[in-house]
Length: 318
Image (cartoon, rainbow, N blue to C red; front, side, top):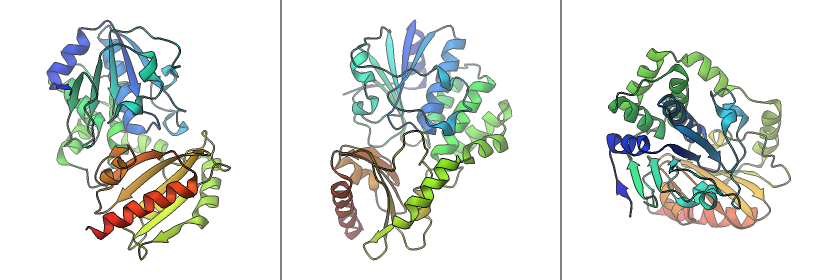
């Protein structure tokens, strides 16, 4: 089990290290990238040496985040020396990817997922936070750490992407106040919104191929989309696709299946009432009650069958 710390304890632990490795989770989203980059800027401004790691392709959607090009791709066979590993927004150790093998320093995990497995040596966990970016902001605030405009941009992006621009059920007065504080520092909400809503031509064309294959189950309460392996392109963003079935009247759970390999399927789930984090846990995944994901080692057809059956059972228990 992890030793849990508060905002001050986590910051003091990081201040005691000279070199820190910040690890974003595989399948990186706005929260893990924005949170890690915001923390990176604050640590570097405090005189620390920081290595940024992510074992996955960086989505082009977040190209505007200051420092994004500093990320390195870890290789399991190459050992990296640091005093402390900080894993950001990852509820389980396997979400570290190859970084788990190339780092041997003690782990501090900063996270907000209710499904956190307490794998780290030290844990800063706040399941009431709308995003890990909110935790980062509160930690810097509690320790009276100056927040630069580039740090603010990163943390604001982390918060708004994880609460759907304050539309999702995890939106709280606390996260809105944090975002307002970051705007006062210099963040331009309109500019960030425009950048995040921008879609590449390739992404829109892929959406046009995927939407006709939308399938419904459980009396239209489950809607699924799938990206078969022959259409999958790691350089094309599919992050927003899941919202199309989610917006359909009567749909309780929207599911996106993405065959990143022939027998490896990434699954994203969004719900209105079903606790999809419990379904994700059945497949060694995790997340939140209304937004969760997992990776299934099976063909696209088999993965879809297994997950849909689990969701149908969850719907019956409502």
